[in-house]
Amino acid sequence: KQEVTQIPAALSVPEGENLVLNCSFTDSAIYNLQWFRQDPGKGLTSLLLIQSSQREQTSGRLNASLDKSSGRSTLYIAASQPGDSATYLCAVEDSNYQLIWGAGTKLIIKP
Amino acid sequence: DVKVTQSSRYLVKRTGEKVFLECVQDMDHENMFWYRQDPGLGLRLIYFSYDVKMKEKGDIPEGYSVSREKKERFSLILESASTNQTSMYLCASSLRGVASNEQFFGPGTRLTVL
Image (cartoon, rainbow over all chains, first blue to last red; front, side):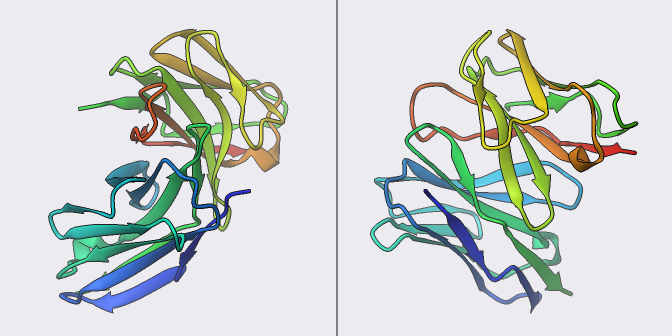
């Protein structure tokens, strides 16, 4: 059964730093991997979707990579800002078109 | 832009009440999903639907039912609410059939059962 793990559970860094969030999954048979952002008490916003045939996707200061063979993905945030503070979730889509979720990394960017 | 709306942001109900949570999407998506989110447990799939009048159980369907009478609307029903159903409920939608489609989420409904 697919399991998705995100480490660390929480991260606090000063403003301006570059940082990396990690996501690992146990079964490499995935259709895609998505990164989401969730602000406190709010719904989820899709940030990046990497299809299984792709290695990375970029959007602004965000870059997500995917290594299916090792079961890993990273979300790189460049030049972090206080507005980046949120919980970041990764999810993999399995063969039944369902998303399997990690528990998230709570990110705090200190001004 | 895809828009997914949920009928209530906050809801307080009493144990034993019947509760309806409504979700509407405006992008003609075939797939719709209901999740609950609890601290430390992440998102868990309750039910999903691939088309009108179709429904499939997710990981935790016990105590819930769903209704999909129209393509744009997916309702989650708590037949007899219990305190362990206090949670954040999130609805999502996506296009059907083709893998690698994004799920778009509503703002969530925070339900408290007293």
